[in-house]
Length: 299
Image (tube, rainbow, N blue to C red; front, side, top):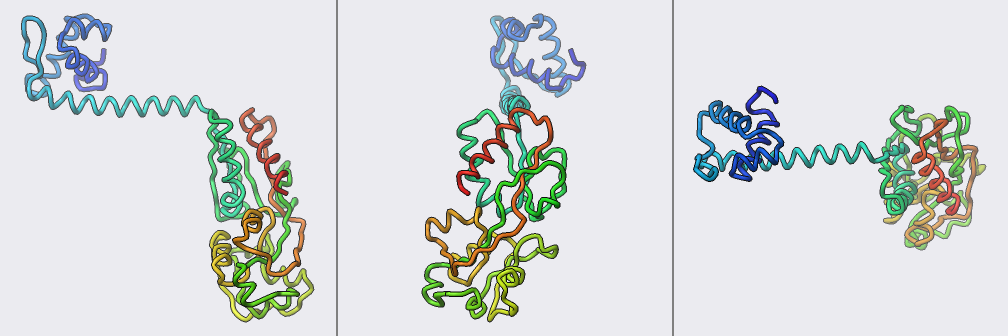
């Protein structure tokens, strides 16, 4: 036994004694001798300078001070036991960590992971979203999903969604300012920009117009947002025209919350790539297979 009268072990001795209010029964439940238990209880009382139990012929009764201590110890031990059980359960639960950007996490990954969790509740899937398109690969991330060209990807990579970009807006906006028979007509309406692509890893309005063969890129007005979610919400609310990545905004197009502004869609050699380490654990393999299968169905 520990020699510290107020360590967790001793508090458990006190809690059991208070619960049984009988030294013999409490000692049996704890697997200690009755004299040893009695000695430890007296140690606690001496340290606190109070009497915790009234000693009676057929058992014990808590004093007022003992009742106060029992309430505190019972609550504390219950919280401690819950924490220990939670830690043990998490340690026994396989965990798969995914890392990707906010756009892919919001529009594509969350629905797939939600379905996977329902089908495989014994596997804990965690999503780490980052504003960077090419986050630093760290060992704790089992399945990075990164955007860029194949040459940007370290190691083995599997293409999940190729970059294909059209123009989107709300139906009301298109009815009010359109129709847009050609992409040149978009230069006369507010364009919604996504900030933070200094490296040119994805289509911007400038590069999209250039790929469409339009030399003049200056628009009548523009709005800028630092996340793709906000850019699409702005388009949905009729604030202008945004670039829409197929594979991300397909559900919004299908539901009609946004529509194509004009029919032109442009491709590139970029896209979202799944990176997987060799000899991955079975749970990582299962998540990767589920993602690939689920995304292929939606392409």
